[in-house]
Amino acid sequence: MAQPKMMLVTPPGGYFAERWSHGVMMPELGILYLAAVLEKEGFEVSVLPSHVLGMEEADVIGEVEGYKPDLVGVTCTTENRFESFRLVTRMKEACPETLTIIGGPHPTHTAQDCLANLPNLDMVARGEGESTLFELMQALKAGGEERDLRKIQGLSFRAQGGIVHNEKRTRVRDLDDFPMPARHLIPYEKYNFTMDVPGIGPLPACNLMTTRGCPFTCTFCATPTNWGRTVRAHSVARVVDEIEHCQETYGSKAVWFYDDTFNVSRKRMYALCDEILERRLDIHWFCEVRIDLLDERVLERMREAGLYYMGFGVESGCERIRKEVILKKFDRAQARKIVDWSHKLGIITNPFYIFSHPTETWEDALETIDIMEEFKGKTTPTISIMHVYPGTPLEKTAKDLGVLPKDYSWTVERDPRVITLPAAQGHVPLFVHKLKWSQICELMFRWSFIGGRHYSIWKKIPRVLRSIRSRGDFKRYAIMAAVYFRLKIQAKLRARKGPKCPANSLNVSQRKG
Image (tube, rainbow, N blue to C red; front, side):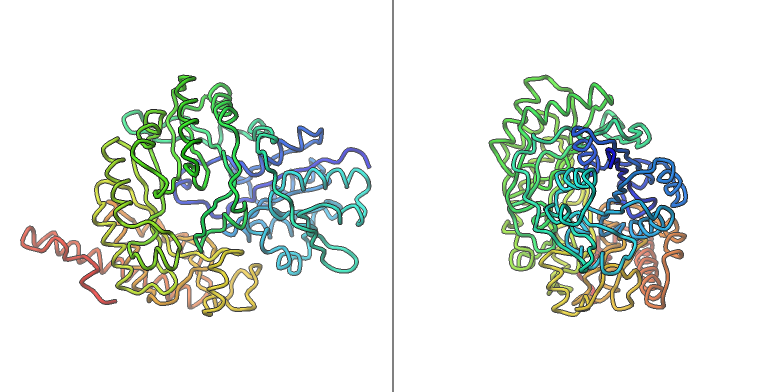
């Protein structure tokens, strides 16, 4: 076979985080790493970010037909999996000779489910895909016989005897072995990727991932199962080289560090800040940290090196939930210190909270409202309902408790036994167990009031209506609307009563569901 070529595709539409839904998108580092490795090894590769280009499925099919790749890879998250599945199906129908493969965090843990239920899907890349795709392209060049495919770690595929799952892919130890992500293969300017820095305004930005893996054990998180518990890191010099490359090539003046735990090593954190300062880089950046690994001295150094915005998981205000259910071992006093230090240094803090943990009661959830109230004015909180992702300890808990059926298939878009909220939370199963749906809705809207967000239900209505497919969907959205309007009416009544009305008259701690 002549030198094979590959097309890597992000499907149209799909679910994207709320912060990226207003005309600003973040380049997909995962497929850009894959493309960079294939290109380095001499293979022809094309990247098609169809969501950024405003393409429909038919447009993508046209691009595939014109490019004539031997292999099409579609990235797949749990949120956008159905867009990926539909695209693979249509591509195979239009181009039956083209091999189809999906990869990413979702199929890594659902390869059997995907291949068993998606007849137009040929292969799944599990885990880190750089070496897997390179070896697959080599095998295709040699003829693509089954005995060659069976040698490729991390590959699942169809064979005459059924579905084959090769052994797990050995993770790359030295991330510096990979070239920089192939940003030159995408229309970078169309992403309009900017970060709004206070006092300066929107700045052209880039995103970097400097580590893979997380040593911690948060039960809802897929990172340890996807990337491993051992943290592997790019060298400090390589990280700053990439920042400079993005500055010089794309005019970047801000950086979104996409690491799960940016401050996992105190020594490395100091070294990185020192390197940025020594090279005199004028850069503003965001990162996500673990607060029990952070002290004031390190934070001061990070601020000096350009940190202006920082996210961290508080998850719950209830110590029992945090320590016994999530397995995060810090206390409220540590969170308070981080908020106070950051506020003093002028760093924006974005604490993450989740409602509807396993065993969480109404009283437990009110402790989260309480800590949000305490930090009001000092933080910009983010909240979500607990999501269930494949491969996590929470998935097992969900099946044990009946939140997910034992026979649940991630390929079934509308399973009436599972609660989803695609218009607001993405197409991911929600963990709804102890708390009533009306209570969860009230907690979510209370967050919007605490955070100073003027949440408009009207903007959501068209998307909500399109997502309703069952009586259960209609009922859940109706309850959500009723709760929203009740709270808004209460707020207006409180405003009319003026200062005589207790300041906490809307506080859900006075209600019992």
